[in-house]
Length: 88
Image 1 (cartoon, rainbow, N blue to C red):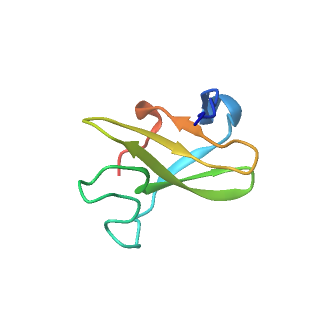
Image 2: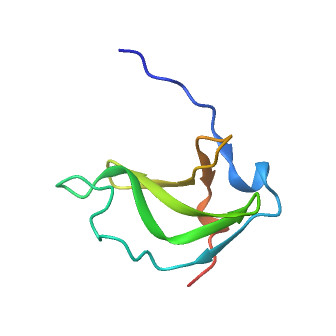
């Protein structure tokens, strides 16, 4: 079974005018997680505005650290660097 390799793009490199804001996630607290708390699409308490839409920020986490990202129609994964998040 082959895996698709996706090139890594950063949100603010692709959309320099994008901004991120704190927005509490109101869904199920275990949404996107497995029984151990890990997952590939775990929603977090931030959202990003770019391309005239709000996009939920997600994290991929399978060990001690995670990678935050957003999904858009033409970009399957736009990574957000830690220092780009505002403090809540």
